[in-house]
Length: 449
Image (cartoon, rainbow, N blue to C red):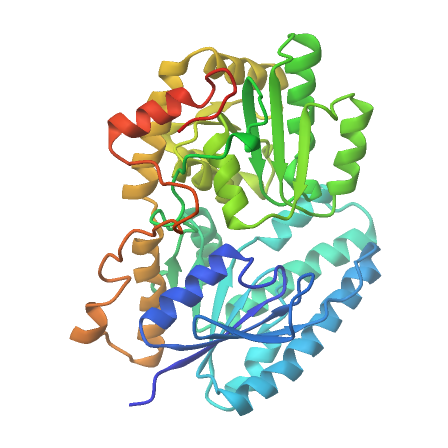
């Protein structure tokens, strides 16, 4: 019997760097699907590669967007390159279903073209683009802004209208799909971006990652205008220069449009010896820093987009038993539950107070860290999400799981990931060892293990 074939289209990030999309690819291949991906190239990426059975076709990304016309050029360039590569994928591997991951909401037209060949369409909605516009620019005032905003709403509407199934990252997005998108609730499935906690788990870090810091804060994520990473700098400035916490250091991991501006701002605030920008880093480095740090920082302020979006960083902090402090957003609280601290959006003083309260209270850090790891492993882990995700494609392709498939992951647990022989050692997940590890993170800045 021929295995169902899926083509996944991503424009925002390369794969496998896009963690959610890569987890989706792995879930499908584990269940016998033949998976292909079209995405932009990252630095040094080949045009084509096969990783763990997933065929990845990559195109040279468009020049960096500048202004409205820059974004139009980027979207048109990416759409054409993706359309041409879809012809190659069809010839070399074939596909029965296209999954498009937004932003942008432009691939519904490509899906309609392929529908004439019997191809089904799944919309995996990662962002609400109208809300993204409102968060960046506010309510549209000029004629040009109104045209742009209405254009985004129209593109989203056409994507909803074209899709055979919609995948939403949380309940807030599902509600938008059903109300603004007019979708039948039965055709909208929630698949949260939960971490694979067999892979994302604390390790005993190399002391060099803490670099002797008395207290280490960490941020992990994209650095766009809506991500408010400047709050991390304002927080460190408050702690170091106004509250005398000269032993505090912050590691900022990630990349994005605002990275260079943030570096310049760090220098303006005389924070260069207190803040480290790593740029884009791999999973091994992320594991080291999240294991070495004392507190994860969620600087995203309340906005039409942020309030209803799931912040992956929150769950990744939780996977490493890392207490976190965030502004109080609907979906951030949904993810963190009682395992994190929340402060009113935009209140830097309260944010600094919450961070200080954790720095000075080892017992509370241990309590929150244990609660975070327990919650993410039992309620938010990717395995349950993967079952829901695969179920969307099983339904579309009438590929009901048989006994053989149900014996495989994600329907059955897979063995916990093991460190390489010469790599870092995993922290035991029983409460005694994990609690001792959390408590020891800040002892004299000497590392743990």
